[in-house]
Image (cartoon, rainbow over all chains, first blue to last red; front, side, top):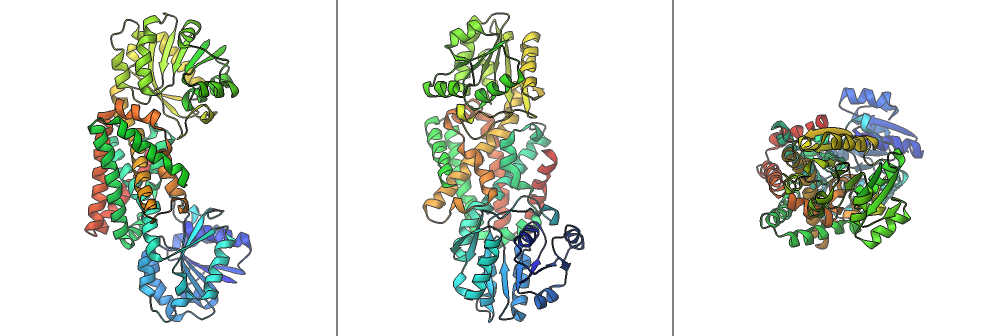
Length: 279
Length: 279
């Protein structure tokens, strides 16, 4: 099949590498609005050609949308206007509800599959593309009852080809889940980075003199605003909900320390330790 | 030289491995109050023998204290009571001020060197000991003007043997720095774990369906209360200070989302991104 990838950053570029390796695609086309990213994608041989969106739509069996979620929201309805019954459109955005709402009831809604491959790094752009980024990870497929069976089958085939496991849920469930296990981690890392940088400027903390623990906890703070501001906007309510829950847990820690209640602090840490069993 | 390691967990056990590899020690003795850890340390050949503390004190040139900080606080004054002028005692606790205060003005204070090797993992016990855990990492050496020059030299020799870089600061500076680049990361990870587990119990979040980002951010939440409650107790004020600063940064994020001020959110994320240049 002929596959077009719209957006050749970390996710789109990594898909290009693995799809090529899997031998699933007869050809790989790329759509990329950044001239610099387009040039790098060709240099890295991520795709065979860079083409305009309308050409990708004409020539492809499958379109994979791997842009920031605001761009997905903008182009998906346009794509569905002219999509053919033999074509499948799959978006890979990190927030799902607003996107599926945008095309709910659209005449060609059934050609579209809402997906979120739960994999990534803190880096962006074609140079961040990694082989095997998705292997062994899970793709969350949302609202599949609104997608045509053959479109679902194509999506499963593609995610299977890059080594992913499947889970099925509604877009609503997805967004609440993703707020906690992905979006909140980013908020926490951004806030940690800002707090430590303020101390660093005051001369009291030296991030480069940290052990691996700090680097691990703050890693996601390197993630780009181009990707993350739209995700926070799309999933605003659930992210706010998760920040509140997180702030409350922090407050409990603070109260324990203020009251010097080390027995309760011990209990809290033991509860927190149980994340071992859930990962 | 003959080296005794008091506490054969992650840090003590990893030191044992690297000191043996470096060929610096003529013999390695272990002091370990947990019979199970003592048995495992011998099975893993971390040390030659397990001995009582008084025997370690009699037979060693150097004592490395690698227990939780509350145990260091308890045994360091006892050790200094009987330390000989040819012996060096080095503690490797993650909070320093309370420990150095405990022995400030002690007749044998000069035989003691306060150190914090900034390396570790979320695991505990002799089985968590890792070769090369310290290589390329930094050891923070505190209040060295209170230690005898030959004791400082011995400490530098030992940390150099396991591949560490040196930084020098006061215990006071250390504790404020460590609150931000180490202790706060643990609080954030514990709070993230608790928030996500509450959602998991409510049926809305599935941690095993997370990508690598969540695993990275929450990793430190697996760290044991035996080690961390004493650190939080020792560095209570600075940790409280850091939690407050962190909570304020979180609040700014929350305010941006509530007000839908995405331009400011973009600016905040760009500031947070600058941690790249500081690591």
